[in-house]
Length: 337
Image (cartoon, rainbow, N blue to C red; front, top):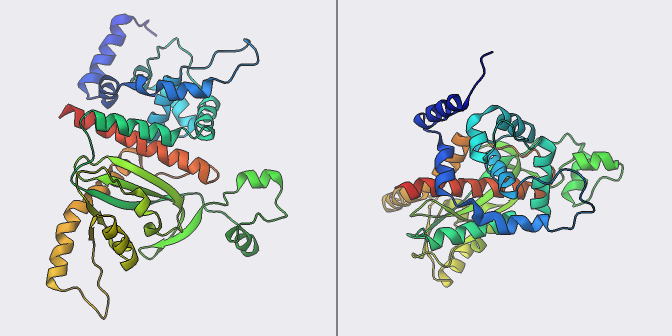
């Protein structure tokens, strides 16, 4: 094997740049230090002793979380990819001689973020940054939800009944309880059964940025988290949504708050849509489709997200990180225009 030198690595990096490495732009455009102050709060706990290895830099660990979310990588996969890929190494500011955080360290950092309830705070902080730097919410907002799959549980009918009633089966051992997700639920969409959670998002129509989100079990109807997601600070009062949000009660509540509702109309066997309603649906769909672009970008970039954690608290962390990662990536694109 021939020894490698400084110029060999420079050549490799130039080749990556010529190939359009997107992580270079992320590093150039995003001010990662923006996140340091809240991230350091989980490090403020007094260490019991000075022995042992010092913790990895909080920004490096957070950027690993973003890489995981952008590329849908498990903890073991992200450890391998950071060791293997020059682009990941450069993005994190690591050299070949530096120690790479292992899978357990990655898991622990995400657990610390989850326990401290920091992810929603980081999401809000970045949204404030976006608004302060020329990307305020404009031209109305779109609300929609996407199902996030979770591994199906193999329970008996009696166990499922207990879980639906909010109880843990009494004969489950402590070890079994730790391995069972009792928060995920079944739902039906398009004639197919799905098991997992829902990512409810509110998007501004101008920039296609996620302005707020909520995570629920898949069985929660989309309209149940409709009103609380709406942004009072959007420059337009227009609200776009599909027919699932179109109950008379919901529409009346939005009208009372001063929003202009643009909800898709839905016909039925005995009451078909007229020509005016069909044309209205077409106009609304052209704007409402922008939220589908977000779900499409997330799926295209990272693949279909499967929650492999246990419980809704960790699911909220995983899904929240994916929404934040999307906004960071989207900001990088918008800032170049």
